[in-house]
Length: 132
Image 1 (cartoon, rainbow, N blue to C red):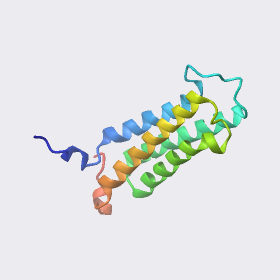
Image 2: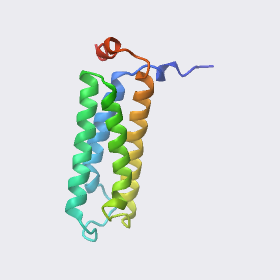
Image 3: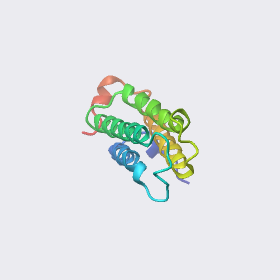
C-alpha cells in the first residue's frame, strides 16, 4: 500500500503546472465551443482573463525561482477571483466560458492550497532551497 508522501514536498513540476495553468487561463477566451459575439463586455472579460493568466504564470515562475508563502496565497486569491469573475463581470450566461473559468480557477485554488499546505512548516532557509 502506498502512502502519499510525494504530496508532502513542494516539487518543481508543480511550479511548471502552475505556469501551464496560467497560459491556459490567458488563452481561455479563445477556446473553442463558445459564442464570442454575444458576450456583453467581451473586451473587459478578455482583459480580465489575460491579466489573471499572466499573474498565475508570473507567480508560478516566482515560486520556481524563490519560494515564498505570499505567492501561494496570491495564487489562491487570483483563482477565487477567476471563479467569481463570470458573475461579477456579467458573462455568467455564457455556459462554456463560465465552466472554463470556474474549472481553471478551481485548479489554481487547488494548486495554491496544495503548495501552501506543503510549505506550511518550512522555515525561510528551507524555502530558499526550493528548486536547487
